[in-house]
Length: 65
Length: 261
Image (cartoon, rainbow over all chains, first blue to last red; front, side, top):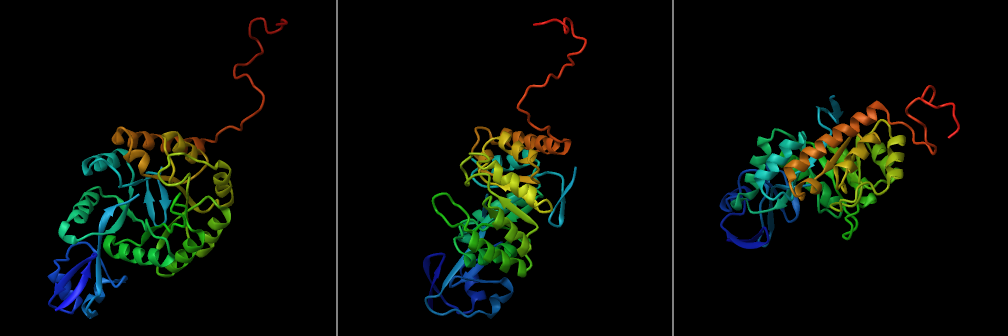
């Protein structure tokens, strides 16, 4: 088990592969993902392995001026 | 009459924001009433489980407008570059309204970080719409960096003060005749938008003045009409101001024209 910080909240996840962790966290639909503050393009999700205490942030469309 | 914004042909010269409306329904009605074809959007950290972002995105998609994502809230070139890349993936557009702020009090752009981020994003293939001050040298540097569009502020974001430095804006228009110039931010009343268009600006981007109006839908149509009127006035050629009065009715031949007053 890894402890990761997802959108600022701690979560216990079973996997280390980013793609599987996103599935565990039910991250789907239109969003962009950053790991440890660094944007990870969707095409690279399958190549990223997480470590304990890593952070994941998901960004979704929002109103803007 | 149609015009060219970057690689896109548009009819409307009104670019509108999607924020601050009382409800999604009023946002949609307002954008429709504005006849705008470009809508600004942003990205925020939000759990996809909440589905709020996807619901908003579905509202925007139904409008069939071009989306212009922004980098609002960024205070460094790196933040803005990362946000732009995320926006490109999420919104599937290479357009980016580049905001790099330098001051929290008046949300004034940081010209140095803005230029740095602009250079990098252009090298990555973005069409950069830089939100800038009305500083001529900054605008020239942005154009030299490859910007086809520059968006000087009318006044600080959300103030509604209108065009606080008409001299600087007129100078930008005169010195950058081949650059698409869009007044962005600070516009409060339809007359402000008309004034910008009469100066020869190519478009106006605003949000708060519509979204926080008493009747946003009616205000959206008021801005639509003002922007069209201002553009027509510019194309028609506004007369030069004079110091002395000049009668519009011919004096010769009027009754008693030859008599002393």
